[in-house]
Amino acid sequence: MSVVQADACLSMRESGGFDRQLQLRMEHDASAFAGDLFRESFGMEFPAPRPIKYGEVQTLPSDWRQAVAIYKWADGREECVGLANWIKFRSVYLIGALCVKRDFYRRLPADQYRQCSEQGGIAQIVMEFGDRMLDDADGWFGYCGDAKAFRVGTRVNFVRTQHRYIIVKWDKPLPEARKQALIDEVATIGPF
Image 1: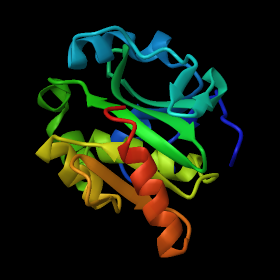
Image 2 (image 1 turned 135 degrees about the vertical axis):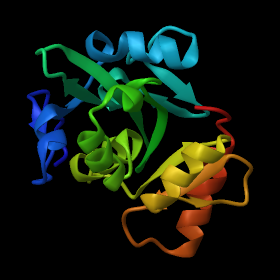
Image 3 (image 1 turned 180 degrees about the vertical axis):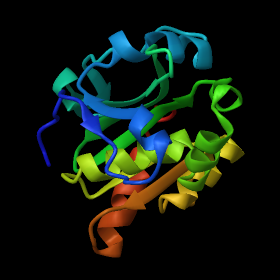
């Protein structure tokens, strides 16, 4: 699907209670849902969609996609527990801002913790959701220096490149020369 749907998108999984409590949404701007989570995770303001120039490529707010995982507690409270941000850059997405609420797993009922873990945890669930929603690119690039985040990335088919911190997940078959050109261009961006 190439158009972002801001309507609630429930997880496509059909297992027990955890999936009924978790709502996944793809937004152009998820600041209303995930602002606090992002500040808690990174100690800075939420990355609201804005124009960014990467070398000669100008991205626009409409190039941004943000997925959030919202958990509904037994008392009816809803809490944003996961976030990822994608920016369309040429024919690929740059993924960043991947974060999970720090104390979320400790607060989950044991059976729901087990169900969440069996699905790889919130970060993996959010990335797999993004994979289903964002099918209009040749692949995704991440800037990853964290070992735990890299382990999650490998579970959704990211691999290292020859450039430090640059990882990639190809979604479409491309000639090796085209892949290398994209890798080299993304590597010139720096952290994203």
